Amino acid sequence: MAKPEIKSIIISAATQYFSKFGFYKTTMDEIAKHIHKAKGVLYYHYNSKEELFNEVLKQELSAVKSELQKVVNSDEDALTVLNNYFFKRLELLHESVNYHETLKADFFEKYHFVEEVREDFAAFERNNFYQMLKKGEDEGVLQFNNIDSTVNMLLMLVNSMEVPLFLQNKYSEYIHTIKELAEFLVKGLKS
Amino acid sequence: MAKPEIKSIIISAATQYFSKFGFYKTTMDEIAKHIHKAKGVLYYHYNSKEELFNEVLKQELSAVKSELQKVVNSDEDALTVLNNYFFKRLELLHESVNYHETLKADFFEKYHFVEEVREDFAAFERNNFYQMLKKGEDEGVLQFNNIDSTVNMLLMLVNSMEVPLFLQNKYSEYIHTIKELAEFLVKGLKS
DNA sequence: ATTTGACTAATTAAACAAAATAGTCAAATA
DNA sequence: TATTTGACTATTTTGTTTAATTAGTCAAAT
Image (cartoon, rainbow over all chains, first blue to last red):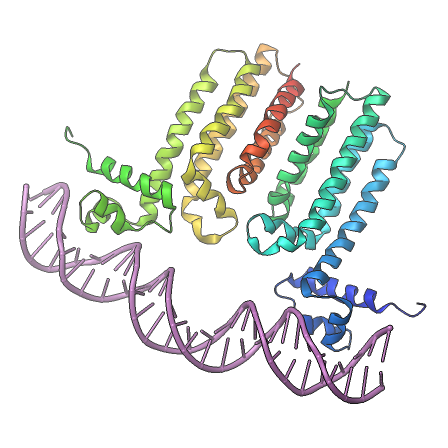
């Protein structure tokens, strides 16, 4: 276990290729060649290309999750945390190019195999928003009628914006307006 | 000019087919057959299939525009008008199936020919939001830092949500939450 | 326990033919 | 004159076959 884990070497190479060329334009042979191994070795450690991509995606989102977790756990006031969360989320997901690919799952049937990771991340975020709102409510800085429907609203907002931002390349067009929106939301939730 | 305008007959048939089968699955022959005319007649009145679709789209959006104009012009207070606008817009565009098709223009290059109509509608909406906010400000019921950036924010929101709502079939999933969002927005803009 | 590389099966791409469809136009009609 | 017709051509799309690529397997080697 001391030597460089073969699995992490594979994942590293796979990440490079998937990130640059996407799932379909990356071949298992390329990945294997890149690490000077035979293709069979990939199949010894992973059952399929889909599973490998899934692992890459999982690690990509895992990094995002841990960064976001830090934001949620920070001891700033709930308003600041919520605002920070929006921007950190945006920034991190903007860089998560394999996640972008999974957004296409809603348009094309081909990406069914990433459902689980996506659902996991969705649940993670739902939980985060809930926590942040709850904390704000307890601190007395936030106010809303119903916490669940407010969470739904925030999730709908951030999710809806992912397609324009990450698939339609409106990031630079929207980024300033998003700042506006975030301020507005936070202000609207203030008690 | 007293007899049934051939152009309106063509548009009516074209609307039926485009609405049901979309741009690519509708043939000029079908439309012509449906009105018991030769295909050539379509080309006598319209230069191309694209131009015909454009006309259909234009009329579809024209109807939406006039409905929305009524909302904007109503003499209710600005808060109510703004709220009404959101829902009327949503309801009308939900039924505008040819407009839905143009949303794909951002993903696929094939729909460049609808740019003008889309831009016209976008400008129309920008103007509406501006008017509504302005009116609200003058009446003293609305308050915001910068009217232009607030308009941008509202446009970004409604536009971003169109893809999930109309292309990804999340209408029924989102409709309740949108009610929540609208209330929230209006509340946030209240002075 | 892991890696190899030749192997098969399945998928995708290329090439071509056939069918469908957009668009044209000279002649007919009203 | 304005409109309509339908046969016509030029493109596009679809279907089909073949070739090439690639995912995935596995017995033998390390």
